[in-house]
Image (cartoon, rainbow, N blue to C red; front, top):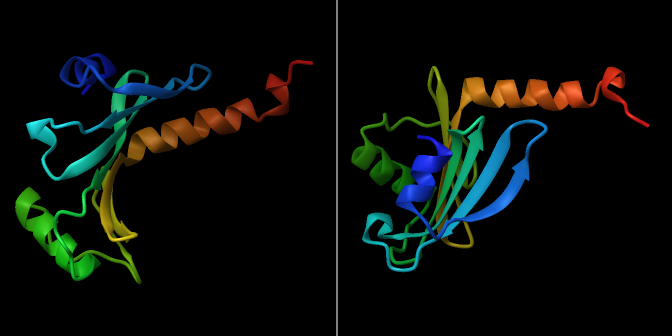
Length: 138
């Protein structure tokens, strides 16, 4: 998905950060009754060169989860992902070939984060290049 497509779907999304030097844009959408976001409170989207590479979804406390394992089991069933995730304490991670899914519970609210592994590597490389002495400008 592109940033333009996302803004069309969610016109209330606010720009949180724009780092032109690395090509990153972060948008935040608060759910104010959007039926497409039922059960979610916030949607955070990160774009690299205009393409979605990371998203974080915060869920509401409408459902009282018994723990992260119960949440991950239900999330996996609903999305068709495998149910064996790695992790300890209050987070679980599912590593796939091209993406990573992480789930955590913080203050009773589940959060799911999905990231494109190749895009994250590309962003990290750009950030490292900015730190290079060759890019120093007095």
